[in-house]
View 1 (cartoon, one colour):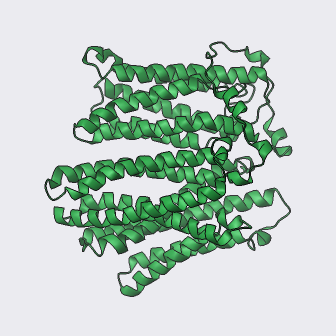
View 2 (spheres, one colour; view 1 turned 180 degrees about the vertical axis):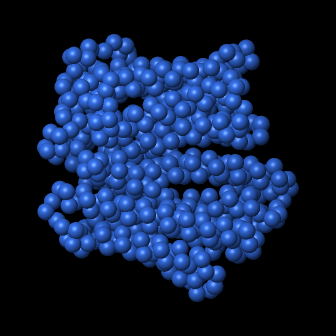
View 3 (cartoon, helix red, strand yellow; view 1 turned 120 degrees about the vertical axis):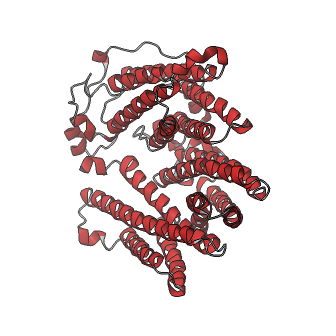
Length: 534
């Protein structure tokens, strides 16, 4: 268990992502209730849902904060002589305690329907925001702490008003008693979301200028690469939001079909939004680019040497030529919490071979999915079968130090977080392959079954965003430069496929139907050029 707790990128980042998401949902729910639902004179059903959503988000945030502070405290005590009493005097423990109490207070206020509770809800939200900002990068700065804290608070507020409130709009539109009520809520939310988006982007740009510092740091540090990923997601959400803005303006002319489209596109926006929240959580585990020393930054020559196209490796060294794995006990004793395997040229060649064959499989799947759009190529609709082979390939080849190829037994291998991620990824691929093949073949006609593929794409991409690649800073960044685009393409494929399935047939669904296979093919091409050595 201590091994698992010490993997910052697997446990702490995931818990941080959960708390950021629940914070956005909680503050977004309060904003939606006070700025949208109540002023728009929403029905009692909508108001009750908003209050119930706030209560659920408050409980989820409190539970997530307890788990996060427990994991952080355990990690801190296991690596030092500090006692639990010492930990309770730290600033991060106090900040988490305040945020937990605020969440409980908001849960209570959401149950009460009076003016005092409403005012208290607003004050508790502001106090919760202060507590969350106090454990951010801004609070840890020596210089420019106050302006950075203000910018961080604005960034959180913008996220809540835009992305955190969006699920409430999505549910509210389905519960509205009539089209007029739906239009009033949509119009008020659109104005709030526009202001929230402007606040989020403005504060984000200002923080990026400080935390990144130079254009060179955008592509020479992990922090810069993750910021670019976040920008991509925000731009994608904004593009969908702009389309929905025009839909809101036309609701009076053709309400029912436009209202349905508004909700369907909002679903994709919500998915992209919480992918952006996960990216933000990953950023909190990285040192700001401005703090990364010159020796830990990549040079242009190093990037070119690793990233320029070369023929893929289609053969691998024998298993016996690989370096012997480090035992889990030895790694724990040595306080080494990177992936538990030695590495040499043969290990790099083995990994590159795995990535290149995986890329070839994904490329073939994407091309077959693209060809299946043609009436004369309907046989290509069985493209999901290729992913079953990919899952078996990952299980057998991804971790040669573990069962079934290596000496480490099956259950013992699950104590290493990176192996857990690989096994979980293989399981997701199997689930996807089975369901999508049955859907494409017409054997499984249930509507929900067709949503497995986009859900698996989004979930797999989210898993990749939290992936620990290497102990060395430069090696981690070089891996990040190939894995992050794959994650973004995975999210894009999932969302475009979702839109194709959920929206009525139109030009938008036709474009979406060609985009997601193209995203798969691009993932394959990136994997085919993956390398672990120059």
